[in-house]
Image (cartoon, helix red, strand yellow):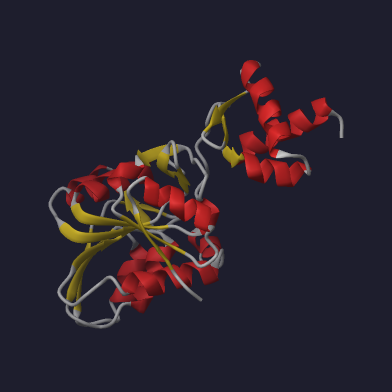
Length: 256
């Protein structure tokens, strides 16, 4: 492959993924890390991308990403979500007041919750229905504008409802986790709701499978210093876990 062709394809990969590490690009193009660094330096000089710690990020204009329908998300990375959910439940005890967002991973948490006394606040219609089967759990819905594709409540009414409560633990997923740009979501409405969720809890647990690492979605939610703990799946790279720990996050890796 010619140098110019490689650089063009490299740029396409960065723009598609939003953020990519040097080691990933070197493996993808079967060249050395040093060759990729030179390519990135050249592309940055041409103002086509920006280099970051250990890789590169896209500077192409961001576009709001369409929400993947919940029916499709339920069957994506099922093993990873189940692992994360099983680990998350270990951190929930009787009489806790917790928050579960509208992610499919949070729905798996709801499915795994024991039928014992606790309070769950949620903006997810699916979580509400799942927990309605468990008589000892008090379920509080935020209400708001129901998004048909995600079955989540968003908007001003949802945000106002969140202002009325305080929980000791919040279990929140996201679309992307980036060491430089923090946590992000696919659209502005979901991002605003999750910002509120982070503000009204004592301990924030981010539920994220390894596919979300080094990704930057459309709407910024929070910087990593707002996160207390993170639960990820058994396939997460130790190097990524170390980076998150260095950022001050307690990382729990689920095991198969």
